[in-house]
Length: 195
Image (cartoon, rainbow, N blue to C red; front, side, top):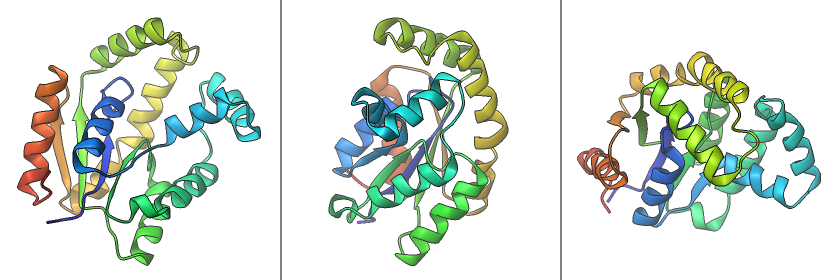
């Protein structure tokens, strides 16, 4: 059986956090979500949290160096030895290089990238709903538009790198949670990554 060393990628509102957790649970690997780590620090008022809150409230993304250090530390923990699922990192070409260097050192390259495809208007609708349900101040119209633009200009191009490696599975992210999850499992199974 192939160890699941996965990345899930898609625009904000694509469902990657929800699907990422389902995948991690099914394959019994940790879901490493930079957003969750940052939000936990903000909620707990840690020094990192205060720094991150100011950045997020401005609609900006946390700097690469800080994000990379957090991810490397998390992947070095024992529970990630049998595989992992990354959500929210890497998000640009510089972070791809940083992650490649770390994983190459460990001889543990990514073996699948799940691209959740969702139309922009559907992403915006989902984010607005999430903001209403969860009371998330960082999900206002201005920051949503800014984050989607950053995704389109900085994050989407990393898919080309992974496509060249032949490890991207494009999955339609529109449908019920179960339908989307089933599409993901089928794609991973075809790669020998089996639940």
